[in-house]
Length: 254
Image (cartoon, rainbow, N blue to C red; front, side, top):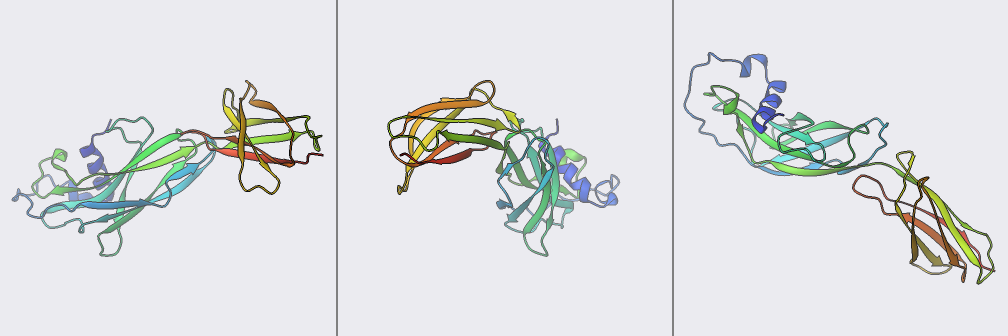
């Protein structure tokens, strides 16, 4: 486990010149007179990913806007960092992290991390903060931290849905069967709810007609009475770890 202070120090060590933070013999100086700025806002290039467990990695870019630039006076070194936490991780157990680079001479800092299919699906979080080592620091416990801004990032597995409404065409008043198979991340998904909708020809919206549950093989089936020509649609709503998916099939009623 890595504490907040240790994470910040790791960020600084990753970007600081070797002689910068490791000057143990540097003479003691007065406490810093320059206060650390505030992290005002954080934006990301993406807030959600749909990746299979065997998929590669995608970049996610973080951009932090501070109330002022990170100080250099009275500090051995300062930087802005981002830590990435897996779903369910404790407050101090970060999965990955990096330092953000200053954009020109502005108070904006930006940088990227990989977000990969092999990661655990669910709700991840990123924490962005500034960190600085005072000139009079005795050890890593003296690292100073700004406020921390948290950002949520969703990782879901891709869902696929095969669907067929039959027979086609069907006689009015006869039974029509809506059937298909649901898979998530390439594997059949059992005990999942699939909702069946219908939109009559010329109508603008779908109406919910019923729901069914997938079998151990991911299959689902539901019978309805055919009354009008139109389009039938199967919908799996997904979850915090599985992406939503739908499929449709038009049927003519004679």
